Image 1 (cartoon, rainbow, N blue to C red):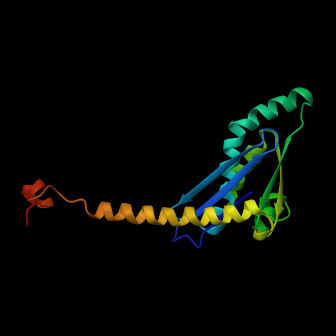
Image 2 (image 1 turned 90 degrees about the vertical axis):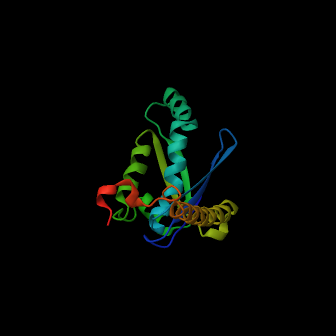
Image 3 (image 1 turned 90 degrees about the horizontal axis):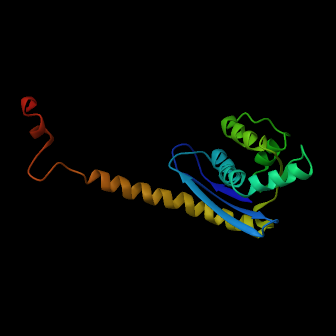
Length: 174
């Protein structure tokens, strides 16, 4: 279950996901943000981040166990999004023109032995989606705060007291 928050290329975007695993009764929380990114990019990131983690962690053992008992089968993973276009693209019902590089990553994870089934649910239909909506917004806002703090610190960096940039190349003083 995931969600994203973003507006356009000139602004930060954020995302969040909760990966519940029925087999282990585990719920793993993922959050992230980028300094620039569209909402469409952000809508794929919660799934990409959580699936990468799962495929290299608990999913690896699950695939191994499944292959031993039923060679060639795939681990089915249900993905819930409030972005209708993302669900349609994931299920092959819409072209993946936008962000095809990110979709290629999702497809590469699937090729490890997973079958993804994408479900579109409106945000207010599932508690975990309400949570990921809130956390994705917080992720986007936090990177905005961090970026501003970093910019302020960088702007405060100056040559040693009593010097200017011209003191370090005396032959070019003007």
